[in-house]
Length: 459
Image (cartoon, rainbow, N blue to C red; front, side, top):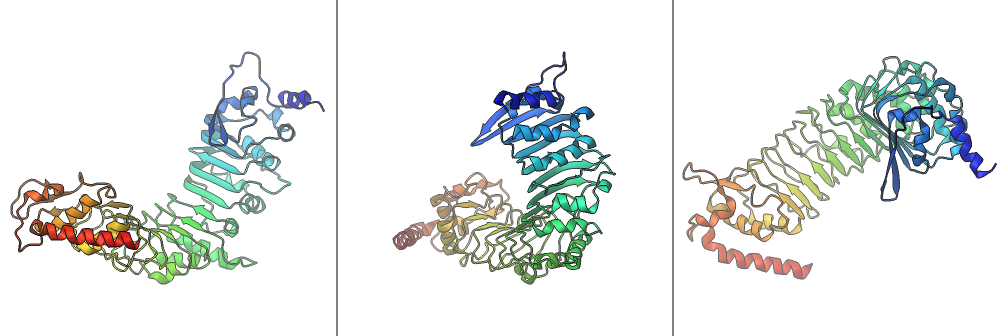
């Protein structure tokens, strides 16, 4: 077949343009080595305007109602084969997708190179005719955010079709998905997807402890029990989880888990100790921010490198893991600096908006500042006292590492009720020789410079 015949066939078979129908242009843009094409939903009714998208890597339909006339549906697979599409990613944003088109899309996907589907603020309508695939589902990544389903849609996904859709997935994101959450239901059909899953994001779905229990129960009751899961990232943020104990069985079957996000769940007093998190073995990133926990030492596993405990009610934090590289403690109730001498790999530390009145422990502070690349410690009720003068000197010395210095560092004079002052202006307060303040600044300067010089020589 001649080249122009190959191009003409899709033109004749595909929807075709009607006389008098306005041409809706698609736009293309290049990001690094990826070419992306964006089309409004009504463009699907006039695909001649979509030829600019033929050689693109990503195609997005947005804003409108997606449907396709019945007389063209039977030709879609043939056309797809002729086009030899290079497209790898297909996205739907703020669209309603009719069931007929959804079914046709699922039938066509095995004929394409598409490996990722994205649905954002979309609504999936009922499929009157479920797809009848003959080849494996090629998509490995599906992302759905703020997506709603027709109440009857999932009823058309009988177990074989459900397994066909899910078993090939390695990355699945279901965030704020209404009437369509497949994980955690009382039946175990959808649990099969966890077997090959490496990243699973189920945030913002009102998942309860019972949902997590159901997942664990399904895994243990499979006819052919699975081995250890390959799951490396599990995100359960902004759900209705309350008991960490209920999560333990799932974690124990996920020894490859590297990232766990439980932020913005009301965990409160449910910390169960490092034995639960420690069962994962490889956990490097743990997010327990805004979970209401009062103590963290028993929860934090050995070996974690990135730890987010911000937005809780911690009054102290002891014995940080030695492997720690990033520690987020903002918006807690800490009244003293955590002992970070053992955290020799620490690079990022946030202590802003706590209850620190001083940055005492100059030796520890200096060692930490020497290692850090980023520090945030403003928004605390510091006192304008001589106990902070050495810390101020260090903060000035390492000001390029302190992101919120000096504008977020205010202090109040404990001797009166005057308005807050800038901590950077602390030299305006008189400190005599018997105090640990500015009267000793020369000695402090010499000792600090000596330590810094030794550190540089050893480095």
